[in-house]
Image (cartoon, rainbow, N blue to C red; front, side):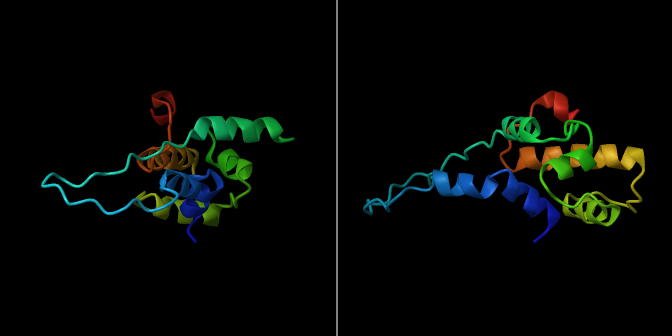
Length: 127
């Protein structure tokens, strides 16, 4: 499992698909000549979940700006090699060496990818 998949799992992204699925299949209805219906995607309130986790944590972690603190808060590996893998997972190009600038860019890329996957991320955290 990729590190980004682990992030999605820790934040409950897999559970939203289960919650949005109907409990029992509806009886088949005659097909209409319209476009197929698409089930609305349930948003995951990422900020609320992370704030709850931070409040329960003994450590003071600045998950809003630090990729290392975000990973620690989620109980995931925050080592340089893990962050290198995460950079690949979220599509960051180039050699990731863990500079401050790269860590900031990785943090923003992770939040952007969470938003792209249905995470409710405020714009001020994406900029």
